[in-house]
Length: 235
Length: 235
Image (cartoon, rainbow over all chains, first blue to last red):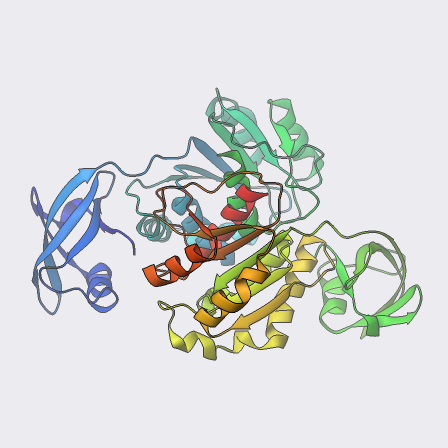
């Protein structure tokens, strides 16, 4: 936890908060903080600064906070991702939050096992928990927006053209001859397929609405490696 | 498994192999392959090509193989990494193998819990298993070399100068003012610290032997995200 995220309900006044539960235990047991110590804090959706611990008991602590700077800039990037396996889903969400991605759409795809859509990790609360862990890691305060789209074709045909309007449009696909461009300095919509890749029909549909297929060279990367690799190339 | 790795002991002759165990079960149950099917195969440490299944029974299968191309080029990169938490260690090794890193040194560091050195994941066989999974994912055949160095200072003072001779020398460190350079087109030695970062003494020691401290901007990334992010920037 490189930043303690403060929610609206933590605020006792303009510059005073009370924290309990997971964050309190982390501050007490991992940071081993005591009254008088200062920690980096940030208001969810707002500014970042310092919190000085003014009171600490067995169940909670209180801090006086000074919020004086903006969170790191978000990436001008929308990630459209074929729903990952449940096992990697949590880590992928956390990693996207760490990198500063603020718009995430999880979509269906032909090669995706239908059972993935039954995972408890799709629960909004569980998603939020992973995204908060990512923000706490990165030192950010702005929650990414996550949308689910269980119908591939209506999403790509009816929503994606407008969603990606004014952005560079890329589909990450192993084996493409075009290498992912570097340091594009423009907003991007990046589509990333399932393990095993998109089927030709899906690729054609992306091409038909103006997407370009790009790869990272001859290696086929697992999703958790490929996502930061693509994002680091682009920005 | 995007490539079936063949070990020397699999070869019955120059161009015929017998496979059992984990790979056999994967080919039978995940690829659902039958006699006559062709799969991508590679000889461990050698070339890549196709294997045609000529026989398949309850416990093993035999293939005729044609190995006709070289594996993807390795990255001209040595990664020196503070030993990760046991939980992430396996994924980090797999990810490094996926990206084509061939030289990995796991070192001690002041902020690293001593218990990490007791993890069973440091076992050579377990390491090899993760690296093979990475090669099978990437479609590569060349096993990375992994070295362990439990004494930080002797490693950095006595070994690292020669190990990093002729390469660009970078220490990844959050908060540095210098941003990691892009597309350097030269060999690199990249040092990556523990969660919480290197202590000032450690940073100074790297500086004293010619390393430059670089960051990825204001965000503090978790190790699994930071490693592909740095490598993608550099190459």
